[in-house]
Figure 1 (cartoon, rainbow, N blue to C red):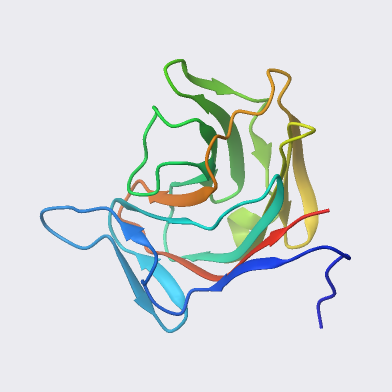
Figure 2 (tube, rainbow, N blue to C red):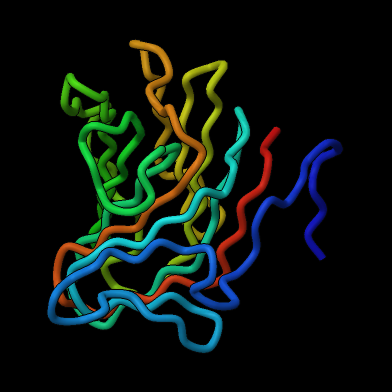
Length: 187
């Protein structure tokens, strides 16, 4: 049983299919597919969804992989049909064991927020539960891995995210699996 704080609401749980997801179009292969409750990527490409993120939200999911990977996770993006530097958002860059965060500002490019953070023990595993939290009013972001806080960021330039969607972008052909996605308001 997982209790949510008073006033919290689950906005999305899944996936149960590709319905509602925007998958990037590539001429050769479909980069993302749905299988047994998971989004799976075996090639370069994006998948996004407008989940109607509120001003304070939490996005969590299980991530598993079978080889070294490179995954971008865009948070509070307005562009769900493909990664775009002309859409203001926050971009987490994940590899097995590390995470960095960039502030993406339409027309101004990207800027790193803080240093690359280490996700303890992730390099020795093939699966991790990640939770991304954001609070527009406080320009605050946090990442938890397996229930433990890994890093916190305060955007001193003010909140950049202008959308209400999320986007996953695999940057290599390593198999990546995303399951048990839950999007909720966060207190």
